[in-house]
Image 1 (cartoon, rainbow, N blue to C red):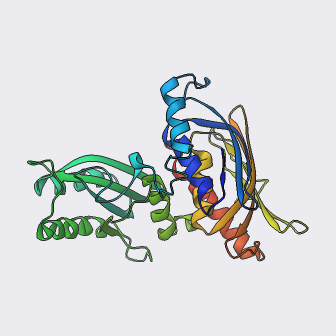
Image 2 (spheres, rainbow, N blue to C red; image 1 turned 60 degrees about the vertical axis):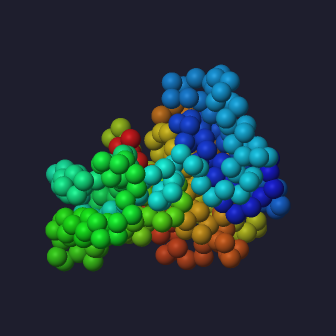
Image 3 (cartoon, rainbow, N blue to C red; image 1 turned 135 degrees about the horizontal axis):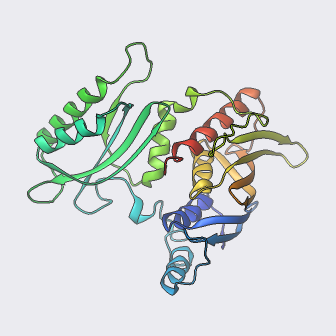
Length: 306
């Protein structure tokens, strides 16, 4: 992929490949200066090269001069969140403490108010649940514009989530109608990040390895003084959309990726990112490094259940 460099372009490219469920086995990223030059090696879910002409044509058009990336679109249409993102549906965002039966109770409220759930994206992490529901009227199959009805639904959903919260917890349940056009997976990451789910676990160090099938990610942050970069190294179990989750988190934490090298060896992945903050600074304090490590580990673990 060769293109004029612009903020967020790496995430947009990776997003296109991830939405096609392609697995990135190797990647070389260079976007220092005014030009963006990346190479991606991808395979399908069966571990085979992409030979389907329609898929190849789709990628070329999406990433080409008239595609979503170079045209300046901020999201990928098939995975947007928002009132206008999936036709006549309303997107509802919910976050709160997870517990058995919660989704059943949410479904019951929507059914009683004559809403149909057309689609849903649900993630759980550190005893918290975040979901985006796409709903419409169960009779007309169109978006509901009645604000009284929508307010009633929102209040009842808040009551369900509020009943899940611990009294001594600083975290609160929230529900809202999404009005933006953010990619749904990115929005779920943002919801958890705002909820500070990364505070639920300790800092990962290079010598802490969990010998379970999905071993604990090893994440380090080092300074490259002579080049003016912070270097983030990630080693963990390889899986689909891993690069998207990492790049998404770095982007939303206001870090810019200038160079990166991605590779996988069997079930293991190794990813190295050369980053700076958007203001041009590198990570100076141990507190900054610790926060990046915690946030990346949380981002990796959120999607493990997939």
